[in-house]
Image (tube, rainbow, N blue to C red; front, side, top):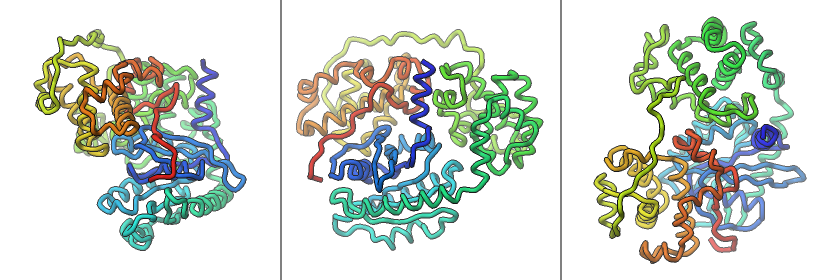
Length: 483
């Protein structure tokens, strides 16, 4: 088992000849560009939930290209793919003027990540085959691309539909990656050496102040805490981390440091790590890399960054930190459902949104998902499903034993959305839709894509998107020459 997990980790984080990420807002054309490069043809797609990954041969070089879903619920997961990246591709829909500022904000956040520092950036301005799209000069000005410093960047107008400009952009990125890799400094070599250290060597370098302070980041802090907990235990971890942190960081926030010790310790106790190494720990606990948002689920911002919190440990004021000792009251009860009745569409949505619905079933879940997707479309419908599902499961009395599950909610959105797209089912009512697609009534369908322990026994899957480990979720509808 450990050998198998190591193989997976090698595929995820191992060094290919070139490793690139394709990012951008939903519907920008990321997946279409990927398969234009892979197959040299236009492929009609539906929004990606999770990722697509393909190996593309270009100019006698192999590129592993990760196409990351662009919906707003998925974008926080982008950071888990940054490690080992050598080239960045950001796709902009040249006709989505209303969301140009949103594209800029997401791109700026991405470029601010330490793991993507100095990485060459290719920006595809897609869909130029359609009239009245953004011009390069306008996009460069509005997105303030000339303010980008310390990295090579290039804007390529293109059409994933016709293929115009797609290969020209990749040719630039290939040359930029070669140039960047050949000019990497000795600092990069030192960082690589640290990554190859054993736990004991890494811990010793920390206390001897032999780690590079200029490359000391959140991931380094988490690794230090993890190593010390594994080798010396909690008491020595707290002492050594607090005694030495001022050497590496200015303006140390003692509350934040203690927070991460507690969170890492809890994750070590609560999750299995078959490989017993740091990469395996991060794979099982990706939420720990969420440096900004995770602490703010426990602390108000004003509390966490107050002067008092910087000089002494302050208790959280939103919810308690997770306990290392599991609570005896945490045993899950089995979900009970009442006898069901048939609903018309408006009646169901009214009771669901007002939290007065008195019964629940898999079929009702499908019905609600279908209603939002067919009435509001994919972009708006997905947000409504998540917001109203959370509200219902938090407020409805009969649903107190039904817990909101992020990954399962996304799974059923994808399956219903895919089925609508495949069958042109917009003209059907829900009863006809289900009669035509009875496979959706199999409430264990997700087990064709996920191992049980990955989706049902994994608390991470309940809080955020976890990728399937049996086979990819279906995303492609057809492969043809139509837009």
